[in-house]
Image (tube, rainbow over all chains, first blue to last red; front, side):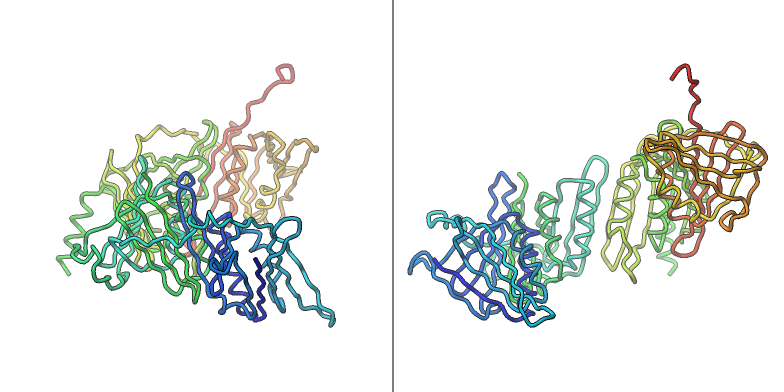
Length: 280
Length: 282
């Protein structure tokens, strides 16, 4: 198993830092999957912890100027590492305005992801900051739990409104209730609702766009006004929204009635999928 | 558009209270200033709304929002009274965010149908509408401090900045805040008696911060610091404060607050003095 990669471009470095910050906000521990073309950050929570799952994908060639890897074996040319997400984002904090960043899988008594940051300095001598992030190498037999989630056929698919507005609404709703109902229809309406003994609050977003229907999907003969709804843990939604520091290029919300909500986001060339299951 | 007007008129008739506001922050900030307990009592008359919060039967805060602050304000009955969860109300009023975003205003329409009905809030920002239905509760009797301006012994009007620092740095290890008001030296003194020693803060009567000084006789009264501390919220927002003490030692703090549109609102705190405990008992 081998992995080493290098970023030299400032914009790529900033972008990678942003991605790792987002991951740190979304998942305490995540799995980093390294394959010859792609990097994935994966979260697949146990049902007892809420059952949220996340799948973030980036093309290595959009970030790295050098990228070498050798997987577990020739036919399974992949590496799966479990790490504390915040460790990575904290290590990258020092990389702002760095000249170069190197990531390497090392073994220093235990497996580590070693991040070395070459910093600019006033004098000609360069300074190098090295972080060793402890990782757990995930054995081959557990990989099957970490595969790309299958996106179920949604009842309603709708583009999300400005995430900042959504975030402040959900933040306030969280003060009042633990659960939230998210509902949407095929004529551009999306509602966020909470109901408690004390108060009912509904925020109505209108005139949103619905993506064109996939041909054989079930939603084809659906009444466009009919709402599909799902009851979810409000903290999971807030966590997702809080992780989005910049407005994504595209943000899609797919609702499977009473089953789950699936968010499909695109930040330039990084795609993020986030699944929140319905509360039973 | 007579038809539309007719429609709004009919709609308004079924509500005993209807109030609309272009900028919800004008209501939010002033209610935030009296938010030290979960529940509040609301009284609406044709002059406006009074919101009252009380604690420990010793302190009462009133926020007055005059009818003129609202763009539309109608009360069908002589007075409309209900009790409401203020924490929830504030969360609803600030549903689009607590800190202002430049260039965007949240508009509010508030309707109340009458006893037993919820308070309805319609908030709108940038085309997004939030509807809140907050259940109201049985109104409870509020305290009557019987504070009458004819019984006021001493009164000082200060620019709030003069009191702001003093209040934010109050020694909270002290149980009480002692207020001395006197026609003679030290004129106006705030004292605390904490773990690290006593502290006294004197304001000379000819200070630039003192706008009016009407003290007739020396009064030294103590107030529970834990009860007065919440008034800091109102103090921070205010431009002027009037401090009055009556013949029973009851304290009234009146804060003049200028809202984002330059209109004036008032928040008033009443607090009863801390009962004297003789040396032998303690």
